[in-house]
Amino acid sequence: MKRLVFIMMLFILAYPALADASSPKAVHITETTPVFKETSKVAVFLKGTSHAVIKESDKYYYTAIGGEEVKFSKQRATLSQESPGNWKAVHPVRAKTIGVATILEKPSVQAKTVGTIQKNETVHLQRMKGNYYPINVGGKTGYIRKDQIKIQTGIPVLMYHDIVERKVGNNASELELKKFKEQMAYLKKNGWTTISPAQLENWVQKKGTLPAKSVLITFDDGYVSTVDLAYPILKEYGFQATSFLITSRIGRAGMVTEEDIMNTQDVYSYQNHTHSFHMFNTMTNLSIMQSESRLAIAADIQEANEVIEPLLTNGSSVYAHAYPYGKYSTEAVQALTDAHISIAFTINEGNVYQGDPIYALNRQRVHSAMSIQEFANKLIGK
Image (cartoon, rainbow, N blue to C red; front, side, top):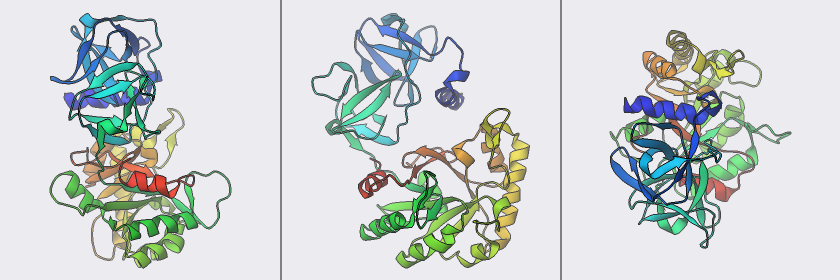
């Protein structure tokens, strides 16, 4: 039941326009109040502050801190006419509070205090700005000083698509070859070890260990540039990578061929990115992986498996999936299990941590505007 509530919470955060018109709403804190996650006190909201709530029970209002559902007493709050705020914030940084952390209204030591978070609590933050980490608190942005938290690094899963010699236009899926070379050189120089999805799966489920600097390199769609341009660089550095294939596009112009797949498995693990379900439903504006039935999705995933597996030179099975556009549903997760997929990736920003949901793992998008320092920060979860 708790898992269902969490899934519903994520749905509301992702699609606020579809939620009930009366939710979320804002409340005004009339008396400084403790804030709980289930039965544990995790934070304090100060008197005079306002927060959005997305649901309520007889005793509690429910809101979120950094995407985590929390609750506080209805006796210490009254309804407010303020805007309920924005629920679309991304929190790719995970940290623990060193002591009691102060949430500030603005990134300044003179700023008003909104509330506090208890010692040794896991918090989900936005990327650092100056000396502060932004955090969404009850629909508003608050700020926590960097010296009040300790970053949890996790394991980065880098997400690439198409590598190009020279970029023309603003296609976010394209990355210049020069920048890809620079990033791979950085990984090599700084002692990073590339891993497979299977190794990551074991680690997430606490069944195995990984080197301290482990990284999973992934490519989506199956562009021929993964073979023509990326493969020689990866091979030079002794790196492994994973290529998620849209199998209905194998052999098309600009995409890998069956021969490419068979000849590059010393570097690439070839995995599933659907057969023909990499598209949106124009009637609902949902990904096909969100709108189709469990049976239909399982059939498509299985078809992709059956295209890839005869091409695998070591006789292994396909076991990993990357959701098109990062979108999925409960039906899609069930369909993956039907097709013997045991690990799946979204495009939600952030590193992967032990205990994360194995069918909804984060990745770190790599893009052209990123500096090598920003690349380095993503690796360590900053």
